[in-house]
Length: 179
Length: 461
Image (tube, rainbow over all chains, first blue to last red; front, side):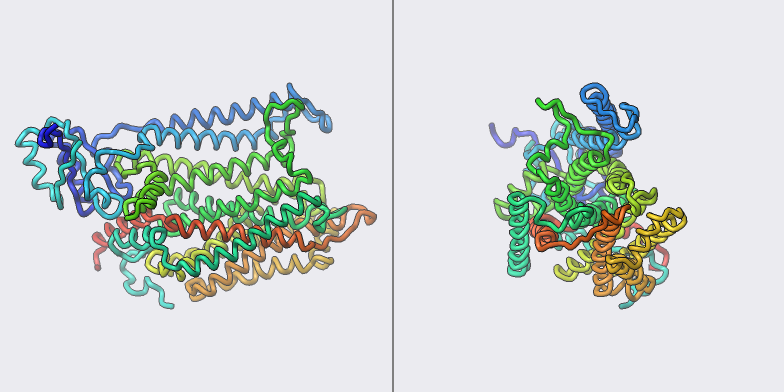
């Protein structure tokens, strides 16, 4: 395939987080939808600005935590009441106050594992290769530079008016990335 | 040393002096890639490896000869091994608590300290976890503590605090590792991007899972991180309460008291802050990180150390008061044994090192002097060890009947285990300092961004 026919995504480089936030808002207003933004640390409101939907991580965690708690309680009840009952000082076999601590620990473990798994699944990680790594300057995204990514499939890229918006966003540089 | 805030009283207090973001990455990420003090690191690693070897020998001989090589005997069946266990797990509870609690309370100054505090936690819990296993008598059956279907048709007894402790510790270790790793991923990506050699790029590239700092990723990451923190705080409290219940559920005078769980949690936090202060001082001067771990950090650490120390002292006072006020002759006898018995030195050592010495922290000049803070942190660390020793031994050596009164002297192998675990701790910590970013790079940048925004809005600047 000839190089010129390859679709090219755009990577706009900014010097500060505020520039990136402002630019993301304006690009979105102009009609771009297939956006992503990269920063060396979390920027408040950036994900909402480029139009990301809410996450389901709290639900993952709730389900994981409930599974841990109920599974833990069931395991202890089954072990000490059904499978291996031991009479200790005539106390009830199903002594739930004593079962609380292991059940609580298992609930925490379940919730943490589910939340972390949910985060990795929603983020699509681990993924060691991504087109954005092709950009020479992208190494600075984990250092001190802020980037806005416009996917090559975004229809606005082919309109002259859409392209014009990009020129006065205050970007330090605009890189083309094969994608 | 001058108070940094005195320079401009109108300016908002800066935790980290304003500097370009890149200077943070350069200072931290370059340490694992181009380690500056290779000779000193190798010497330190060699010495700690020697002590780790001593640990291996001590455990090997223990497995060969049995627990008779320790000083324990009737009635003191819990000796140094349990004191060491409680001490290590106390240190190990603090890092996660400091990091998670201060994150939830939006205490931005934590961002320069949380990484090495969490690492300290992991290694301390690792050292702690050795002791219950080697204390079992038949340590090769340690997996009987875990619930699993087996041909013996046996199950653990879930009404026993000993089993609670197994769950609490194993899960705490797992959650601490996850919390540490999740917080580390973005920084691993920074080191990956800074790495010029192939080995570093692949090593940190795989460890960072291909992190690229996308806005949506950050949002979900932050949600998860705060979520883990919110779960870690009650987990820490439950872990050390569980340790305290190993004592307080028993019926021995000096142990059976309701103040033990909060008293233990406070003591754990206290000793952990002491060690974090020591590590902060050492790392700061060794790697010249004065612009990331500032005098203000030391000042705040000193204040928290003082506050948690006073809470621990409250535990001492109430523990003694309830023993006396109960009127129970055995409780009182144990109390007076602590004050003036054969092991009174351990009680007074704990009181002096944990209560008297920290009073220096009322003075700003002491808190802001790294040397003083280091020595007070060391005093707290040693004092808390004496407290654990005192709690274990003074209760056991005088049982209810004079016929079961005894004596406890730790043997060489008891001390070898303590020295060995300290060596193991240093060994792991040196590996951490050498190969991973020891301060959270992106979280310090977050602090810098807030300070920039504040500086722009401050009127008189």
